Length: 183
Image (cartoon, rainbow, N blue to C red; front, side):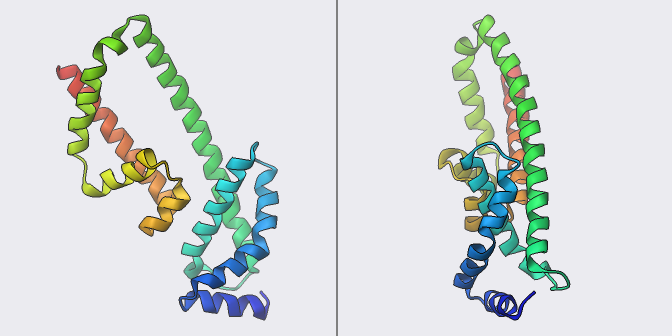
């Protein structure tokens, strides 16, 4: 790393958040090109690039300077890209499973007949969630914030938020299915 980057990182570590913009400007085009080769659309690329820089910001304490900063940042980008591919694969599997489930419900007209029951079960299950879980659901699904924005608001990494929301969704699904089956 050059001394200019050392100075910038020292400023960031001492609390100068504006100095991080210098790092972003220096590496943004490199990271964007790297991600652009792997993802199909501009919005996905922009969101992942933003997420990478947020993740790197929160991981700066783990950067030891033994290798070039750009290489360290590209390593984070590679890991985030792998996570994105895993997420998309999982999302696609879930989509197909839910599509089949909804198709079965629609064929039997059960969805319309039971809509109130499902909404009531969701409301009851949501009451059982922790305040923190409700906050994450509000930020992601009501306000529509992406993981990078939620990470900034909650001072957590994007990956820990993805994991937490996955667990919350699983808890809600199990709770809702249990309440609907009881009714």
